[in-house]
Length: 202
Image (tube, rainbow, N blue to C red; front, side):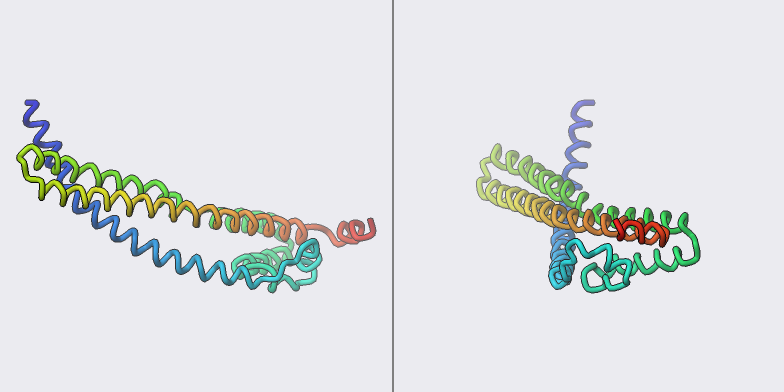
């Protein structure tokens, strides 16, 4: 019974090796494409003007397109349209949907942070077992080949995880800033004119 279980587990482990290598290769391609999109977004955000403390007035006057990302501008325009119809409840609902969508955009990087090193570890241990079996048979050439594959998958998996963590950290700061600006815009748009005038007078 034990021998049957060992054989079954060995077959399952061996059958995972090719899918793991394929998944790592696909993840590398995806990471390169995502890095290109990230770099384009970074360049776009660097070109934006820093509004500083003038952002509330710019939101109220409608001149915020040059200091906020395009997706934030589009959401604020939709907030303005809903607020003009007196739908403050709809404004809050749209704000929450926009925030949820922004936070969900980080899920792919969160998965990559865990998935890359995990696949790299699996891709390391499987050929290590085959390499140890080759060592027992005195086949050093086969052992060296298996070790090369094992360590390569480790490097690729760790590189994917580290790269995803760096992108996640930067993009999380962007999302936090965008969410803050959206909440500010929603609060300003939902304020009464009298409230705005009293705040300016104060």
